Image (tube, rainbow, N blue to C red; front, top):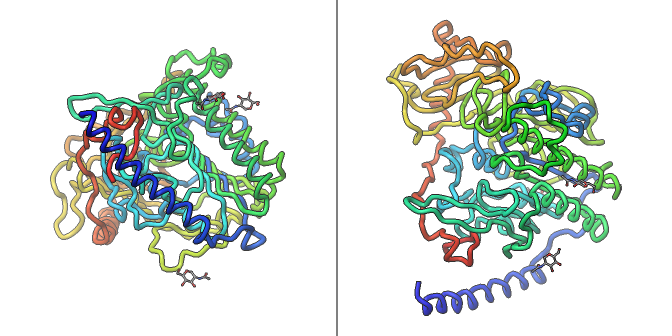
Length: 520
Ligand SMILES: *[C@@H]1O[C@H](CO)[C@@H](O)[C@H](O)[C@H]1NC(C)=O
Ligand SMILES: *[C@@H]1O[C@H](CO)[C@@H](O)[C@H](O)[C@H]1NC(C)=O
Ligand SMILES: *[C@@H]1O[C@H](CO)[C@@H](O)[C@H](O)[C@H]1NC(C)=O
């Protein structure tokens, strides 16, 4: 780029950014009709902690060797969600959490949003933060975004959040906060950490779990002091415990017993996150906010076996349609729960948080098309879950597998999975399929079951066989056919996939060395 084009760009930015600043100032002072206090006395604070790549077998209360005393305690005297599902990878889970919509309805059916991809959660969809804001909530996001940033309109401050501190891409270094990515024959690198819209160059060497925890604590503290009458929504998608494997030494000392190098570092990362959750809940208690808080903890997908995570005894891991990829660690704790210390076995899904939390906040979902169900009663009181069915996904872009098995119904070569009551049907290529015990356990992993050339249909009774060891697709063709029909039904409502090619203009070196929106 020539000097004059840099100059032109900055002149242009000066004008446009100036106008934007002016108009947003105006809209805040003249058009902001948002209530300043609770619009309903019962509006609870909502704190949502989303862990990244945190596996089924990585939490103490599932029998893990990893120590998570805070999560164990909060889950034990709250409610554990034992039949709770997320999506197999990052952006898909986050898109469903924030929009209440299945991926077939957002166009994000395929893969994640790559750093270099001009893609994002469609702007016409209101986010959960938009809806909570409508009914008077202060809304803050701290941590990983991963829902698109190629245009400013896709970034958190334009998606319903009053404040944002974190990184916009899918992963990076925990200490330098830098991210590199391949844009086709070329690596591009840059800082990915911002406070609001401004890059934050000043946190090099500060481990992100500490950074995000202390920002969350500051938000709670400021909120308690400055707007105690407003309800708070704090969305905290930690970087932990995604790769790269990095953790301060002091979290490793308790894991001398774990011999496997990756598992040991991962365990330390988990324990640091557990401490972060403890700090946040203590801060809520200190400011007397806990008594009116609904605290939710969830993973975004199954553990990544290649980076220390584990989902044993479930089958498969991050990225697959097996239970190990999607059955999520999740629990709720709140003084507002009617029946505590219990395990919920009803079917629940990450898309359910949108209507559940918006209704709990006294908000309104009338006129919105949603794929989630309001599961609050099932969580709080323990009745049946309103959800009987769950479309895990239909991905028409994934490499097809095998031969088409049936005519006049769903094409079994296409990657998809659907759940109806206890029955789960998988078609196409489900992805990584092994049972992998944690490194210190030598168990019969029954690997022979996975090599069936060109197989592309499986049926499981997940209630009696959560390990997916007994494929019943031959024995129950009636159920296979009815679940294929459900896939046909859902597929008719699918929108086209949004998956644009990588755009080299994302290169941070063109934007002051920072990952930033690169299109107007
Ligand atoms: C960087 O952080 C230090 C310590 O928190 C602070 O004193 C300094 O002003 C910050 N610098 C910038 C440029 O923000
Ligand atoms: C939690 O708080 C303690 C005490 O202030 C601090 O030493 C620790 O680093 C904090 N942990 C995290 C993960 O923020
Ligand atoms: C809910 O929202 C719809 C659409 O915005 C509106 O027509 C309706 O009056 C609202 N209902 C309540 C109870 O606020």
